[in-house]
Length: 300
Image 1 (tube, rainbow, N blue to C red):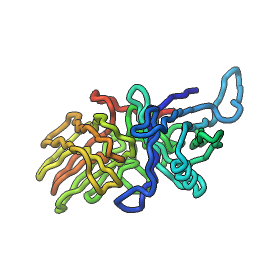
Image 2: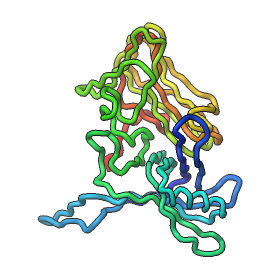
Image 3: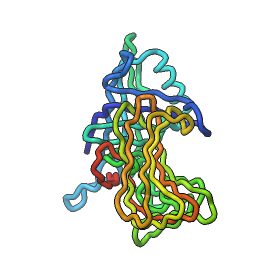
Image 4: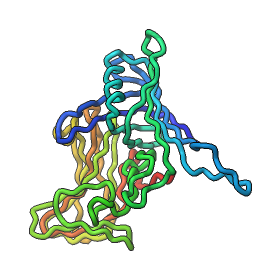
């Protein structure tokens, strides 16, 4: 069905708390500071034999796979071997052509070391029906490859925390999901402040990344904003220059915050922050490499 080559990917074993990643490495067509250039290919193909009925091909599931091949050092292979042997769940992030962003969860399978030059391949296959799980909101393949880096989860209410959008987390405040309008309501009462946020694990390298939020209502008493920031570890050590955009009282526009993410960054956090007794509603947030707001989902 489709096959796409990525410019660069990262693999992160996320720790249980803030701080250094348990494992982190990047793979790219041009690998900075080393000779470990590689090729990353994402493929989406029909799974088992399709069913033919009245001349129609019915595809009941698909194979999703990320395959990386290259000439790797023994230390790189050893690290990948450890992840594969332990069946460690890791997070893949990447950049493709046309502003595509990869977000993907799963484990590794190792290929063969073909020669003494350490020609090596690993991949992360999975079979899924495609589309989003109606309960969790997560794509059934546990991956997303689109111009919206937040689209691994459908914009809907999540199943774990009632009222909270799928894939999002919050520090405080009250959340309510408006199913009729597809909006997230977020408010505080007698609380100093509250944050809703999403984390993306990406092999950042000086690109400008844009965070957009479509505001539908805002009653501001203290002060609210949207924010994009980057970290060189898991949400502990900030790097680069974060950007915030103020949510004004009565705001109903699409707001944007952006930053040039340095090569030292290993994750991006986007957030909506409200102050005491603030009440906002918003929908269809995106993380993009293009400055023009374009909300899409990964309906593949």
